[in-house]
Length: 132
Image (tube, helix red, strand yellow):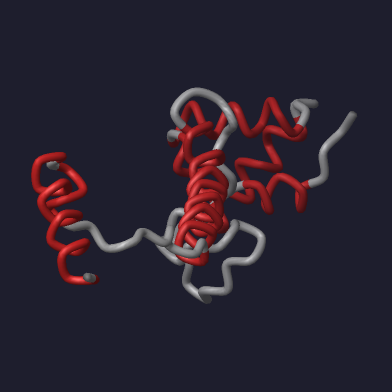
């Protein structure tokens, strides 16, 4: 499978600092776009596939030249973490919303006589005397 020049250029970040791909870099006096395009053409002329060319550039310049991070090692966390954070935030919002919307349990007033049988007996005796 042969790769086209444009495909490879779209997969590599220009090194002039613009943050665009080699193909999309629009600086008139870009010091890296031309040499990178020539180097891509040389690699493709050698019959290398797109993954081989990208591997060559990653080995030469580091992973920073790749337009998209790889999905191995620590970079896998960079791919997964945003989705995990959004999922956990959604779960937290649902749980908190349900908890806040739940009605509070109705509890009657508590008196000291409820806990002490001696006070309860005294209160009952006074209430019977009050009714008579």
